[in-house]
Image 1 (cartoon, rainbow, N blue to C red):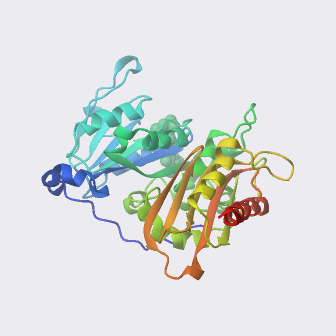
Image 2: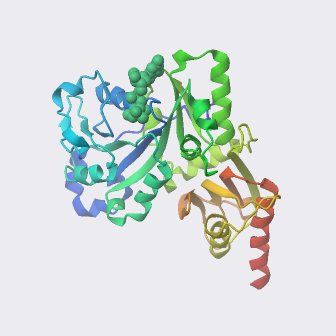
Length: 377
Ligand SMILES: Nc1nc2c(ncn2[C@@H]2O[C@H](COP(=O)(O)OP(=O)(O)OP(=O)(O)O)[C@@H](O)[C@H]2O)c(=O)[nH]1
Ligand SMILES: [Zn+2]
């Protein structure tokens, strides 16, 4: 089974809303009161809306706000919601019997989140469906750069729904400008992949699409579904971007393997481990050369293109492990709660997903940056 080794985890409890209201401003500072947002992405028709409708109508104890970017057909909700004319932003929020809030918008998910935040206290989780052709990296980036948004909510994870029947076709589609196609980006950036519509394919085809997905993203957890029926625990509270993931990430990173090109011009996952310490300055330099300057090249001289970067590193003089998160050109370093026990176990483990990635060269560049500065000091 192509699944990451984390599925025994218990479904975390959400914080009761009463506590949040009482806690007030003080609690604002703590991570606990921020509302998690999960981005649901996936190619046109893959089953995103089906997934969100399933969650909205399913019995569960959570109060989830769902932002659909358009309406699915034949759902119970449809009766109670008037679809806006002319495609302008539709902002009416509906409270459902199971405690969910639902809103349907066209295009502007972020505006919807801002409106939603005015209803603070009525929900404790946000699911946001992006349009099928959206680059989830661009949406994810907003949460990092928009400080106002970032004080109320945090990005929990990116879930990509893959069409079991047409997924391979989407992944191999060539863009005329040589850019990485949307379907591949969505798989590369995902923290969870749902291969949906398995009823439409044979076991053999399922194996094919699963290994294609795995070849792109060696880190991601993969689920297989019909009608996007998943256990909510598997989708929510992934903590894929925050330092809380330090502990589980450590275990997870150890299972990641460098993947091999599967599709033409394919995106791969590269992972490596280097013992010792780096410094914050060195690490920034390494990442910026890679993500910003694009000065790190493969053997053929092509610049390496990194879509997703994740890692746990050891920074000199820091007692705790530092988590590295990168999406396209944005990245972030954050100290985790996991401390280094003994100095001799200090190590740096990185996972990079992208194009033209050469593991040996990446290792050399990383090691070179470490030693260079050590000589200077
Ligand atoms: N056979 C089959 N059809 C499915 C399954 N899941 C969803 N569908 C159908 O696939 C179609 C597209 O599903 P949606 O949930 O609207 O997909 P979407 O990703 O939201 O689509 P866009 O928003 O248009 O990008 C609908 O007609 C669904 O009923 C499944 O597991 N099997
Ligand atoms: Zn949809």
